[in-house]
Image (cartoon, rainbow, N blue to C red; front, side):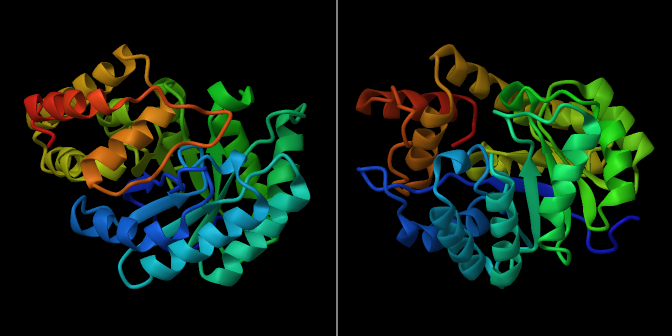
Length: 305
């Protein structure tokens, strides 16, 4: 049975979690962060406590407090606040799902457990069914990110099983480079939302019919990325390709430095002017003060700043 409700479309910023210098959650930054996304980046959907937000490194209470704060400040300004509730513990996931519903979130999402992994697709669906049942009134999105979880079950088959067993199943946050599988999923499950999660391949996902995208770069490159969506919708593929290439060159520049999630968080701080603080261990950042101008110079060269 398909969930009947509003579709989740367009860009969804996977939010970073603001931290103090000693890596405690810095709640007071959230309101400024929301306003920046809406006013400067024209992004009105967010995905909270996911990979970008270091959700698995946060306590349950920290994740609840963050969910409350994001929902409170997004109310009336944003269209959708999706709260990631996946945990290694089923009971913690259900607790977070129920809390997301109680604080006014628009949807929930959950990744597969990644230490003690489900042995079969059916086992994973049973786990996700339990999580979704804790917030039956909220749309539920499965978060597929196999390079981190090691769970590689076919998503189209999983979607069929979730559609049959989870009344609130709405779609998938698909973070993988396998566009062949992604295209098949969209074709076979057109009534559900498939949101692409590899920022630098967004245009390819749009061609295959993606309903939207969830990503970390949309925090500070959302306004530019929205131009890809507009150009594509208008049938101007050449313009969309030109913009995508600029974004790809920037991501390639970042990867060439050996940077990853911690440094993307630093770049968000540089671009937005909002001090998001350091990552939490076990992540560490190699970003140095001299990198600030290097990043700004590259972004200016690519007309991203």
